[in-house]
Length: 369
Image (cartoon, rainbow, N blue to C red; front, side, top):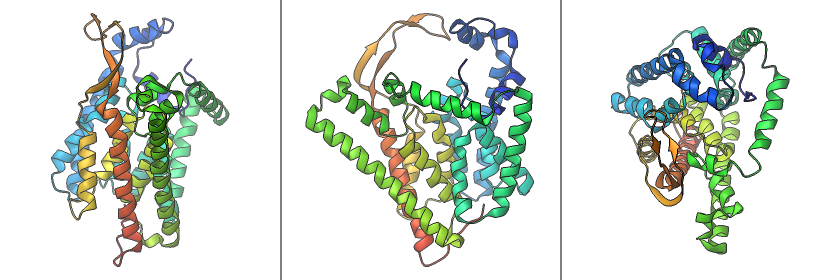
């Protein structure tokens, strides 16, 4: 019905913990009744959510990082993960295996490979964090994780009976067409990690952008274009230099740069919960020098679950799920919708500078985690 764009691990996981009888009604009634009825899946996702906090804390503590508890609380209980919990998104268990794959908790290459394979089958866009390993010619890691990911995909494909590469490609194309007609602009802007939705809304002439005037809108779009292209150019430069100097790559830092690249310069939708992957890697940086404290402060700010609307857009009565009462939510352009993409870009530029320093500096800074 939803034309799933993810591999079959996601529906297999959901079906494993769901009550099938909760989804007998047609959409949208089935969606509402399912959320109220399917308590086992809610319990499982909540259990993963609660387990992530001590898991992240342990990963930071074993890495010898200061303020491990504060970093873990920001990542595990901050806005991106709370948004994932509200959405009931499978980014929650995906983050669990991501921490096991990218942290220092597992010493066995086989265990790390299985964790990476699970993460990639939950969220294939995480494949971008493999770029540092490709540049660093980590052939053993690539082969091991590739084999684990393929095995998990084939097993879940058999269990689900759907999710072939052709089906997934067709659904991705359909998804792209469904979001290109302008009807999803506001939804994409709601919790964006990139300035692309704002640029698209300015081009479409949304009411709050018209207040800038034609010249202001043109300057806004040009500034966004320059900032995003500069970030892309910086990441590309890092990758090319890394290919020439693979022994100088700091894997976690380069992985953060690669993940941030996807969120800040490629993604055009509401991908706020996906920021948790970048934040986990960013918080592995020590509080040292000038650039690291800056990106750490930006990361902490991205975790604050607070916002304030500046320009009201609409107010439509609706029924609240938890209380069952009619409420009037106020939708509008908020501070966070403008500052969060800026903070993500700030982190991206900081990571670019640190990676260039690793590969062009005097002392090797390579790390093979």
